[in-house]
Image (cartoon, rainbow, N blue to C red; front, top):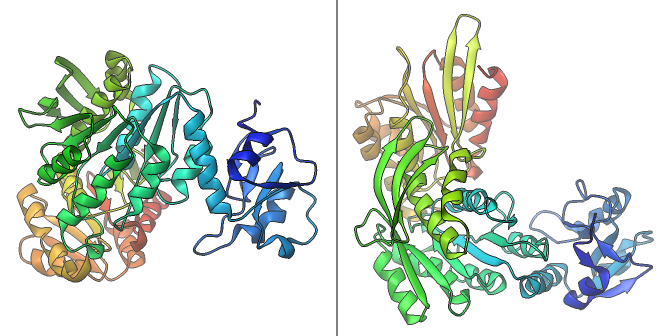
Length: 472
């Protein structure tokens, strides 16, 4: 396997100090001692819960070619048989390496942020751009202060496209991350009430998301959602920053990348899109209008990046939602008892993504005497108005005609009260209790969507159903 970095370049980029006979190069970068591969560099990052230095010896035993450690922790490591590169601070060293990776690449770099749809859009970009060249993209949701520099540092020198997800939950976070990524093209999928507890209002969230524009390269592009209520704020910032090229997407007739027609299907989407003055038909292997709308930004970015638009559109037909983000399971209740459909949206939630999940459920018909069931848990970081925000979900549920609601969590008690008398509501205080209820009460023909913030543990409900019932 060819080297990702020569060790000389690695040391120079991080301003490091080698100890021992370091290898000529490294094949990869890891921050997990359990999964580090032979020949990789292990970065002993100090996280919120654990310090990588405590697992440095394990990383060496598992095959790490070199350990990147901090000067302050060097005396406590004891006798280590693996070569070391010593830096002032490991995370800072990783950031410097990420900046060096950005400086050496000739790839077109695309960055994605937004309150909803970041990871899905990033994965659609990976799929669409792969039809025209090699793509390096972040895995999972590596979009924070360590995930972004790690993804940058892992980027091979010879890729054609780089795709980065950039997240935040406080003002100022995106600013530092985008200074590393320096995108040629940036997308803001939408602005909604995510992390509202950390902001005074949604306009403040819009300004925080707009920080992504501060890092766009000269003569670069920003793609904004013209249908979003915060579009005027974002457009204003774009003009203040003198962004060279401002593009828009959505259903608005003035959008540059426009949704001309949308035809939903239970497990896919068909649409006609106007991209770069051309009208093209697109099939996406995932349902939902929100995914179709973000696909407009994806296709627009692909064209701006020089990819083949027709190939990009064709590639989206094989796009599949990921675990926790719309992945569907058809499960058997047992011999002669029928089947049901589980839609796993358990990774994260805010009011906008809740509404999207409810719409997705409404567009997935139950079979026979089956029911459409919304299995919903708390949305975290909603601030002082959290209970009112949860209760307000009653409106989209009623509008969508969802008559069966299974709820869990402290603040979902408010939604249970709001839905009383208009739906069959089952409330349980915890995810564990609701998981037990779901396993024992699901029936033939049912369609369940499981949606909640990650920290509520609603992934247990999905796991319980997958453990109890086999794929149909």
